[in-house]
Image (tube, rainbow over all chains, first blue to last red; front, top):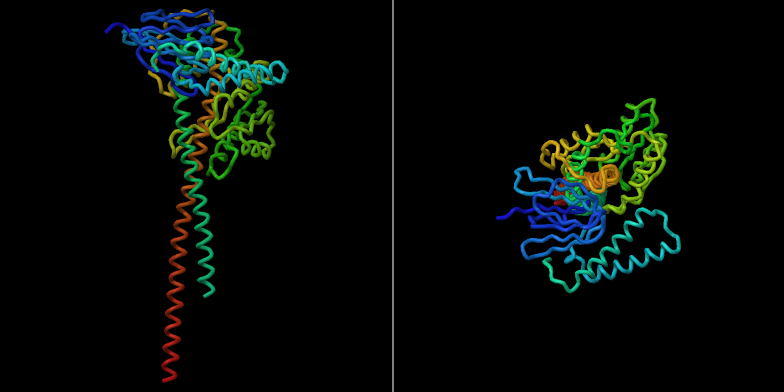
Length: 149
Length: 295
């Protein structure tokens, strides 16, 4: 078996993904990067967008918004361990239609609030808006495409 | 049979109490299950983020980041996590006692409080402590977004330099039977503490030495955002631990109450039956005595 990456995607609320994969594309604040086995040890900040994990011919897309990643060699030297600590992450397959509708509504509501200047806690508000928008954007992007759940 | 009637009434009232405590026990048990699941799920994140922070801490030399600078401690901010409701055994009392002991340990320094949960707030008011903020609307199953306001408040006050140290007094969930009140420092973050905390958590294997990381975009920016995230995460984690502890403490308290009610019912039923038996025996002897006198 060829070298693989031990990928873990963890949010504060739960572990989203934990599997051996061949490659992972991640949106970082510096642009999109793809991590392959034996990547140099790296710590970077994750932006919002989609993480795409590839396992053989399968692709697993996930929506992500904020966080950081750490890549380091596995202790036995057989590959790379990649931990993505995301503020928010969700598998695209788990984003159902009504969640998208709700997220859209929420995003619009939040935007309206922003326009009216009713925002008290800006930081939290911005994070929530970003989250709702990312969800919608990523779900739209992957609609009609083939992917593994 | 006045005594019998009295006993019957007491048995009935205790049976009703038992029904309530039993119901509360079941409710707490299910809430506890959910709280424990949330706690365990977030422990994975907490464990990993600490590990990352430890690798990063290896690089800390001269940093201007306020979250990493250890200053002489003059003013301390304590976040006290308690419940909104009572009937949970010694849960609130224990953590408050711990906080009081903490105040004594730090005599001469200013200790201010943020209270989460109304029980802690009223306890602190009674003790005459200075509460700078209180958050009483924490839900039974807190989400990360519920913790945001608290965490941002803490980070802001610390960043402004109003306090030199921020501690959090919470109840660590060990198991359904044991919960330990604990006070731990969340800010500033220092290297020794990270290492000892990781050893304490023991959820992740000990990392291997220093790895030469590449930092993108750069170390300072990254560190600042990571430290902030991790501090926020720790607040969340500790509130979850406390919630899990609260529910299990309540479940145990209610279980004890139900058991005590059961015992009491048994005793009273025995007393009731004895009284009834005695009454019947007396009646029979009266009747037979009457019969004997007639014939």
